[in-house]
Image 1: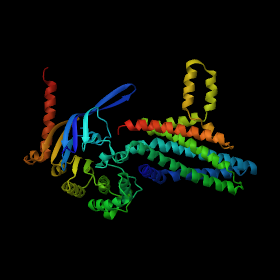
Image 2: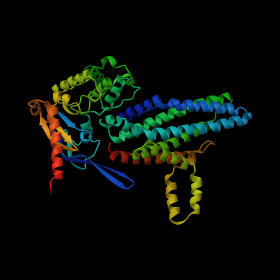
Image 3: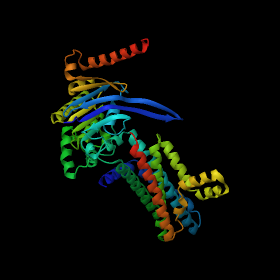
Image 4: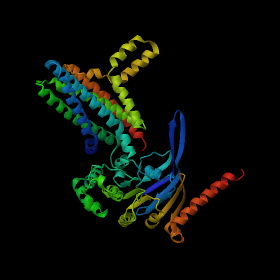
Length: 258
Length: 248
């Protein structure tokens, strides 16, 4: 069975021109990774390390400069691909005048669901994300935690096989984080694949089977669960160690005589 | 087609919720103020001025709203990341573009209907008798709005700021009202400047073709409508080409 997500030597360079001067910035460089079905894969990295770029490439929102990316063995631009993917961007916005229910119906319709499917799936996601009692509230009335639940509900309304979650725990209180983790664990039990990034190492550690460490657009290490479960300081210690070692190697390379 | 309609209704509702009624309220206030002001003039003059100024206000508000909605729509969607939630669904970028543009057009239609309603009430209060040329005037304004919407959408896909897109589209609106004067000036030039001026003149919208306030025969209406449709379709096609390759 082919992997759900497959990056091969993927490179993305952002170019911007101003007054005839072109500036280039590396988004991702020689990135290779495979994520298997039913796996929760976490991306860790400092700000600007390339996590969001990786997700956008997997979603076809950005184009590669070189290399390939395939999701479900398809290039990420076909309808068949999008109907199997759910995406939560970092701090998403929803029209404030919509109610939770009408917002989810809108995304259900856009995902190509029939009225009957929307009815069934809406009940399911409202229940699973704990939004049942809030379904008639306007988005503007929701707390950050509840808005994040709406974000997750819109990403799962069409029952996708793959979830791409960019910092879904950002700004949530501890209870909301726990609920979110439990919900994602249930999705994993159902056989869904999760590709997630978060600054909350503790949550990634609990949820993910494998973790990739990104630094300045490079995937510098992929860790399996046993790599951090054996370590006393857990994933946080392993992550800090990897990033600091990489900084040290870089500094040594810069200062060593040619 | 279903997806286009879903997106159109979404844009339409958002515009209504956020901005349409404020614009209409401003229009209504201005018009009522103008009508009181014209009350001091003679009866015949008052009606004529009320008709002309009302239509001019309807045109101005519709075109300003059209430019503003179109120039800010995509940039706002990018800024709020709504575009990611939509483009990561099983729909093509063409459907996305057409859905959003249709939503804009519906919003502008609603603005025009509401403003015309206020205008007609004021006209009837002043004992105006109905003439079908009124509808023709509105049709001309609507077609001008369509042309500007398409151009503004195209500019907004290039720009990184709404202000730049509004300035470009606003300039096109101003230039579109002075094409006869520009044509007169180009006739005085020769060589390369004349060629360049003629090329630019070709790109500017020729709004005078759609000025049907004084009435227009079938040929003029057909020609004008066809011109507006072609202009609109060219800019929508160009916008689609840009959007297809655009990264978010």
